[in-house]
Image (cartoon, protein in one colour):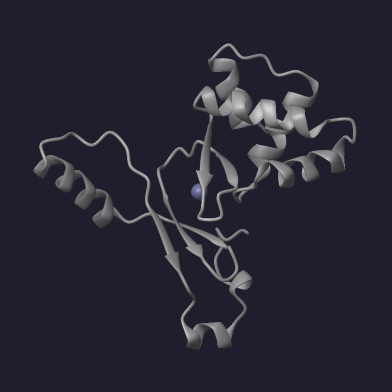
Length: 152
Ligand SMILES: [Zn+2]
C-alpha cells in the first residue's frame, strides 16, 4: 500500500522518519477531518512516545508544503485532511459537528462564472455549508449511519 502523503513528501524532497512517518500514515488512513489532539490520540494508540508537539510541528510542516489542507469549521479548531486529488466542499451539521463532503459541478461552474463576471480568473475557493438535519430524517435514522463521508 502506498501512502499518498508519504509519496507527496518524497516528491517535495521531504524525508519522513519515525514519528513523522507514523503521523503521515494515520493522516492518510483518516477519512474524516481530525484536529491535532484527535490525531495525537490516534498516533498514541500506535506509539505512546510521540508527543503532541511533534504532531503539531508535523502537520504544520505538511500544511506549509501544501500536502495537507487545513480547515476550521465554525468551531475554530484546526482540522486537517490530505490535499484531495479531486476538490470537494463541506457541509457541517451544526448540531453534531459531523462533516459531510460533497462535490457539485453546477456550484463549481457558478463560482468560476462569478469570478469571471467580476473580471477575475478563479484560482481557488472555500465553501462551507452550515446546516441542521431535516426533522423527518432526524427521526428516521441517526446521522452517523447515513453518509459514507461523514465524520465528526
Ligand atoms: Zn474534506
